[in-house]
Length: 159
Image (tube, rainbow, N blue to C red; front, side, top):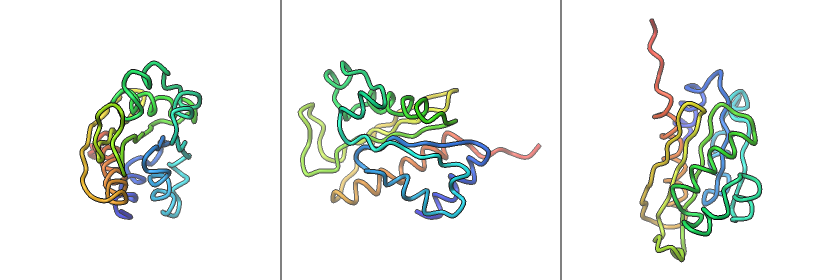
């Protein structure tokens, strides 16, 4: 995970990154801030473990939460754009999902995760289905979120 975090921070040098985390409870931010000098890129994040925080802090519309639930592609997208706007950053990543012990009232099983990315030029949400224990689902989500950031910020080739 350290290597992946270093790669993200290096790739985003000169830009700022923020996070909106639900099921990971700040795990992405913790992983990034474990790297010395990370504050040059990583500004901070919002742990939005409840719908109230998603709606009132990250500006996820209440009707989206009511119709699709907290664990949806729409919620992940709004979380990424909301935290990017709130914390005034170049890029944002968001995660929302179910690590267990049970699924949700919308029929999503444990291991369902949506990861959002937004940078002002593009936004993307990916759906993931992880297996394993609660902690394994959380770890796999953190890793997938970091990889999505890299995917959306390809290495620049020298002219």
